[in-house]
Image (cartoon, rainbow, N blue to C red; front, top):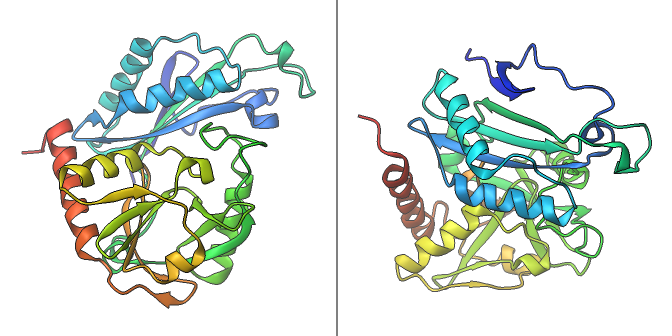
Length: 291
């Protein structure tokens, strides 16, 4: 099995030897940010968009990133070149760094950069072809007045609890609602539905992450002359949708077969199939197709 590697403390090392100090505030308090980035054919996919969101997240939590975008890009390229496979997944993590016990970040003077390169398969290939089964979780999405969903922080506990609900129910993923009972997203992915040939996804103001893949799908849909909107959705909209699918850097595109035991009208549906093909073409055009 291919072993993952990472960039930590200014060098590339194996995941088995990498160590983080126990006083790192990212470990102690979830004080940090991250981005997930796919790479295909040896090239990072949509890296500039991910780094832009990384810096936005840092500004939102008043975390200074001492590395310039060009430096991070260079490190990513080195790591991909050192990884034995042409396709894989990167996890870029920046923590507040090491500091004294206690939540006061004032003692953290040197942010820590960790970039992992490894394989990631969020769902088996046979499930991806047949479609995933979802539930609507009892766990709610954190509200924007508590932690804005546009910040990709290291605090994922409520998503983990929702994922545990999916595990207990024997399904593949869970959908989180906000405090008003409106659909936000999955535990690690954005959500789209199709109704009467119109593509719909919850707005970020309802609690959805401003996903990089989500934005690409909206752009691809527009290019294909598909009508698409950001629109508030409720469980009723999911149950009565013609199609539903999940998107994300880790997830890529996953069609949905059922939600709370209610089978979708089509899976994979025609809209999903068109967008999945356009997504693959975009990867090949952006990263170069393997010969």
